[in-house]
Image (tube, rainbow, N blue to C red; front, side, top):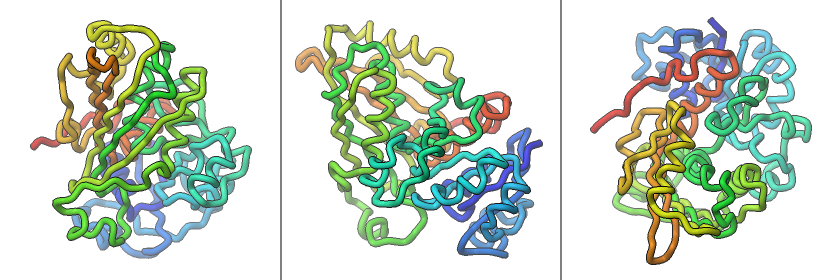
Length: 345
């Protein structure tokens, strides 16, 4: 059994990690940390955890944390892990669920996140934790930058085409819609029930911090500079992301070839399900699971490829993917603790 600590245990990603790890065959939830609820029982924050045997919330003490845990999950807002990680990573393994370590360019991080970046050595060392495309590096890493929720859905949908060189990497338009849990648990007017109910709205148009993350990874796999147009939307549901991506190809490919390309790319992947031709995946069909469902379409009239990709943003977009990365780091079965079927209806 490995000893795991969770920083940010009172947030949505933190409590989802606890749900997954409570049933993991090789993990003990050893320590829980919070900057706002030190000394409290987590069941006082989340009553649904009543009678679950968990440690009380502790203050953040990096030296003690590094000594007490084999792995620490940082389920924190952006800006925190950049300061905590240097005090931890030389003595324990770290999986960062914030955006602090995803971008290799400190300048880009400062530009898009409006915060001070982590030191250059950490940015260089952090392995981007998208298992389907970076499994070997993840397995030998001590520091993982867990991908963002929008990038996970977008990249899993686009990377098979990016890898082939068929796609025009400056033509992609990504329209993405997310449930409100993606905004976190903090109270704000933008996620107030009366504001989001019966309404759909775009936000951070042309300015969302996940844009350079998607471009960075597309560029890495394709070998050329990617430039995307990314627009996120908030929709009145709790969990789920639907990405609809539109792009052009450099050479002609029919629908059957496109389907075969995606089926081949993901045939060995336990958590990516390429749907049948003509499918339209729904977020409800991956709710509460670590699956990403993908459907590929070709519109012969416009000669555009249309990729549909759905995930649960708290699972494959955050905690589930973090556990998948942990499994790879410690040599466990990649699916350990993650075999839950989607919740339906």
